[in-house]
Length: 373
Image (tube, rainbow, N blue to C red; front, top):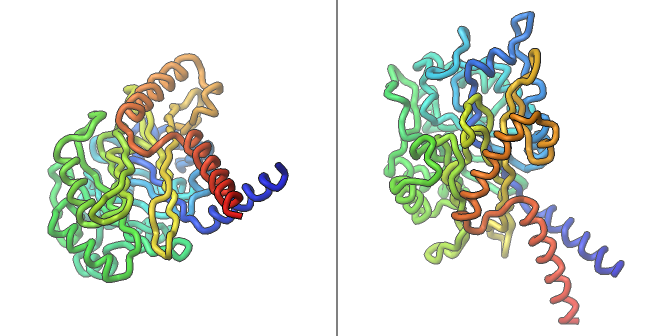
């Protein structure tokens, strides 16, 4: 038994060392109530505590991605319908462990061209990688698709939005709108630049709908047939199903998450009070990457309870710390999200369940090796 335990631990260690862990979070928003909660007496903005309960989980990933669904357009800071968040919000997301910010979404032009340009300047100054919006076409031509090398794995991240709330580009800035010809060209360019894994992050769908519509499903099918490995969705502000299945044509697994919901916001209805953080484990077989596993953790946004306390993300582990009314909303959100996932998810399970399956797999591998001796 001691030998089995030692071998099991060794196998788990070796597997973890060779794998690449990716984490994706949903819409990071800044409504008026969030901005007000973060404001301090000296006029500065402090987001301490917002992400404390999930920071270790995010930072444990080899690479973490979040959708920055606001501009950093400067003062006056505003929430819905035209968002302009304090620069400190981006810093807080970075400190929580995120490596890449998505910015092609329906609020990226909320402060028009100037706000988009300032957002890019702030992110660059803070050393935060970003994709989906660009200062001009020349910049896009030089940096898109965005490529990251993670533990030796070359990954392309593509990011597109269905629209920008009717606000149009005024001069030179570029927003990556959903366009099949552009997407196909970007995928081809990613392969030419040596991408081993392609991730398409899509801002699509209908707000507050718990199931994807036909347009999402058809576009996901297009992306899959073009060879995309991961399809990560946002915009509905509620969670939608996730699937991990085998694509026979390409001979590989493909993961689609139709909507991760809200990562952090001040929305009030039960379904919009949180979202899902998706974790994807990428392994290698005969030198080629493949999606080994995918699991998730649900997060709930708890508003300030007293004084200047911030909006905070909580998970199941912190449920007991909530007051009665917050626990009721927490349970309503969790029950609703888990009901959708239980009914429609394929191959993507809660982190606790997938960890059990991973342990079983390692034990079975050990048993098979014993039989061959």
